[in-house]
Amino acid sequence: MTRPVDRLRVENLDGEGVLENFTSATITNSLTEPAETAFELGDDGTWEGINRAVSPGSRYRVFVNGRPRLTGKVELLDAPFDASGGATVRFTVRSKLSDAWYQAADPNVRIKGASIKEYLLALYDNVGIFEDDFVFDAAAARDLMTGKQPGGGESPPDLEEIEEEHLRPNPPESVYMAADRALRRHGLMHWDSPDGRIVVSSPNDEQAPLYSLRAMVGPPGRANNILSAVRTKDWTEVASHVVVYGKSGGLQHATGKVRAVVEDEEVVSAGFFRPVIVIADTAKTQEMAEHAGRRERTARAKRKDAWRVTVDGLAFWNGGEAIPYGIDTTCEVVASVVGGPAGAYFVHRTTLERTPGNGDVATLEVVRRGVWDL
Image (tube, rainbow, N blue to C red; front, side, top):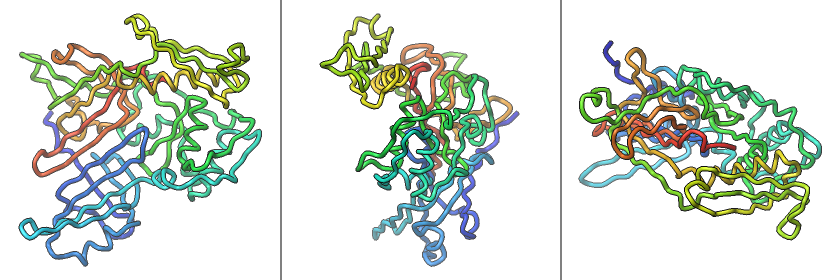
């Protein structure tokens, strides 16, 4: 079966129709920042015709091969001009999560003895984001973006069952940061769903790989799809042990009731001894202290074994269908160069590009399975 051309559809949600005359587009999805799409259009003198469609606040939805990719509004517009090259129009669409990224959290949002879900909804209420704007099932969001729900055993978190003694923002925290701080204490995160909602869940790097990324030499290279790659093994910041003291403990109270030690066995086996001490006043239970330890270990280990891979196309062609590259997925890296066969990796950031010079390419940023552990 011949691989079809990837389809990129951009719809204006304010009645301006389908955007078709862009010369380039770059779509970025990430687990740790708002999703965005940057467009460039050649200005042929019809500024009045496109002004409404690209003005700040204009709403768009982007699709890749018929699957929703991003829903958001125009936040950035510029129009460079020079005498030799003429004029172009560039604008960037960002997701609803961008509002929470920049808006300060209301310090009066204080909830005592409430659930994490109640705190989350109270924070986002001031942004105009309500319960129906959240999806608490990462698998559902993944299916929207890729059309697939690979096996791997995960269940949606029940945020109503997670209670906190006291929650409040710490000015000048943004809404996003206040929510992220509370969620990560329980091994959770929140990120963009392609339909404009916000996912609240745990990243899942144990699912079955959706993509195979190949860079082989000789006859096996007939199935290669990697155009370029950088493999990084940076152990500069790795921690051999993370020691966490909760509110009842501290440097001067090493016998405190809440104390957890999280070890990186691989780092220890390699001969590194780099213990890190974390004072987590909010860790009031052993479980919360262990979560804090794993978060710190993960933050220091993301470059321990990582790839930045650029592949042909906006989607992975498996011989029968084109599956859009998406975040919170896993891939298999098969290479006879830069270190040999690599194995399973977790995809935490994707950049899909369509340009006149390079056509369609995707760049995936991945970390080895088991590293992203909250």
